[in-house]
Image (tube, helix red, strand yellow):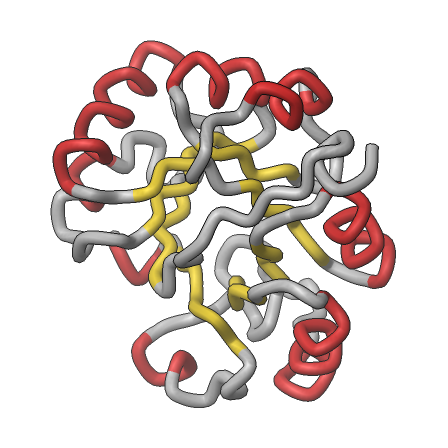
Length: 187
């Protein structure tokens, strides 16, 4: 499955600010999405299927980029982008063949295997995590700034920082960071 199944695409303008939903802490991201500036991304992870059409409409109305986490069929049905987590995304090949222009493809990266997968898929962006210690995974080791920057340089595509990013830590991100993603910041 190289470079989008034979069609190398690049969705321009990878957002700087990414809101991530979370089944436990932010199961319905619509209220938080209302506060985002135009051009930001909403990554819907674990959002109830019944909420997705309304979220997609809200994103279109507000000029936000919607990505569905791990559900390629839902992403296609909504005309949204897709985020591929480590465990993969059922229907990925169909998404790569049929995605609409501008529908972002992002890939979760936690190590070298994720970097290789992002290159194979022709991802538009990578979410490299966790850069800092995070409340989502207490006690889990963070990459730290140096390892995160190394991975971002070797990604060969825009790198978005995820994990423990808040107003203070965002200022510490390396210049190579295209943007950052957060959950807690928006709660």
